[in-house]
Each structure stands twice: as structure tokens, then as C-alpha cells.
Image (cartoon, rainbow, N blue to C red):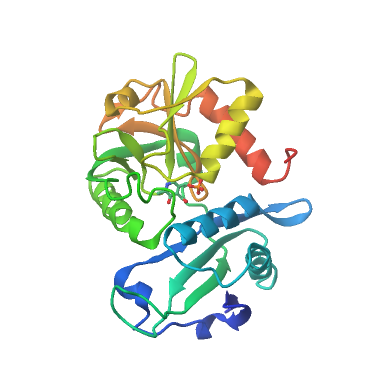
Length: 292
Ligand code: PLP
């Protein structure tokens, strides 16, 4: 049920289909966003809509895809996907992909399609996880192919490692994976940025091996407001083990405490005070309770 925005039109959910020869299905060249609308006193509000749309256009540009729509049209498409499906809280998935007019890596003369779907997706992590934190495992899969060249694109093909890493973590009894870059430094989670706190300073990996997370930037902005010192720099795995607090950030994960990495308890083994403060500020922000 419901409607999906596909190439400029609202199409019934069941009719929003692509052909099996869809180029992106074969070679993975495409990009997408994960956006969220929260219920606020003024009705549903899409958090950081402009930032997500801007990143989608940057991703397309990196992949050399010419967007057939304007940013304004994409913003409107996301609003329509929420409104016309009568959603109060929603996960919104815009995606840019290549059509089925031809095969081969040359990928010329292919149509660039854009779709926006929205649906209600209950919380990514349980309420307990938000409070108690999650167990994380360092992955044997790295972020190497994303490194330097592609980390600024939220590109479909970048998620193969993320999925393998997450599956590996879950089958190993953890809830999330921590991926390292090709030099062994901490990069990010399967779909989250990471922060650690120690000796009065919050640290997060610089933007060479992780996605330019919009939640990450929101946290950096909060820290500026609150006067919390932050360093963006390379982080080693053992620094996470000895951190006083650690947490993931992401549109889906929101602000998610990490209580354990590779069987080592982090800090007190539960959500720390700074994580709690930033988390509650984040929930206020998404609910429209903080000035933009
Ligand atoms: N890192 C990766 C690999 C992601 O897929 C995401 C999710 O979009 C993030 C980090 C967090 O980014 P954001 O806060 O913009 O959702």
C-alpha cells in the first residue's frame, strides 16, 4: 500500500518496479540517502532535509551521474512521500540508479532514475540499547575500498562490506560491527560514525575513511554549543577499549552508546554522562524542540 515517488510521479507501491536488467542491480553504481521524519508539535518534520539532499547530489556527482531533477524537486519529493502516505514518523529512502537500456561498464546512454520511498520503520535499536549500549565487534572486513576515493559518496556499492561486517558481528554475538580502514585505524560502524570520549575530549575519525555523517555533524555542532572539546583525528582500536565513553551516530542508529568492543567493557559498561547529554539533545533536536 501507499505511494512511491518515481521519476517525478507518485506511483502505487506495487507498481514502482524496475526491470531485472536494471544496470545498478548488476554493477552497483548508484547512490542513496537514509532520511528520517519525526513527529513534532507542528506535524511530521524531516530532520536535516537540506543536508541529506545536498549529500545525495554530491554522491551522484562523485559517481558521475547527472541528476535529472533539482534539489528543490527532491526536497518536495521527500515531503510528498511522507505526506501522501499519511506518515507521522518515517524513514525516507531516496535512491538514484541507472536504468535497463543497456549493459556493460561503459554505462553510456543510460537513463538516470530517481525514486523516493517512505515508510514507518520502528526504531533501529531497542529502547534498552539506547540506554544500556550495545556490544560491538571489530570486523575482519575493512573500509579499504571506500578509503579516500569514495567515502564522501553514500554509494550503493559501498554497502557490501557493511553488510558482510554486520552479519559477521551478529553471528559472533555482537550487535554492530566496527570497521577499520586499510591502515588499521578506526573508520566507522556498518552504517554509523563513531565517537569516543576520554580525558575531557571527544574524538572522532577524520573524514578520510568514513562517511560525512549528518548526525556526526549535528553532534559536532552540539559540542561547539556546549563547549565540549572535539578532535577529528585518526583513532586506534585500543583507544576505543580504554575510552571512558563511546557511541555511534547515524540517522537510523541516532545516538547509540557502545558498552563493549571485542569483549572489553568500555568505561562503566553503560551509557556515559556525555553520551546521555548528547543523546537527549539529539532527541530534542529531531523533535523540533531546539532552535535550528
Ligand atoms: N557511515 C555509514 C557507512 C553510513 O551508511 C551512515 C548512514 O547514513 C553513516 C555513517 C551515518 O550518516 P548519517 O548520520 O548521515 O546518517
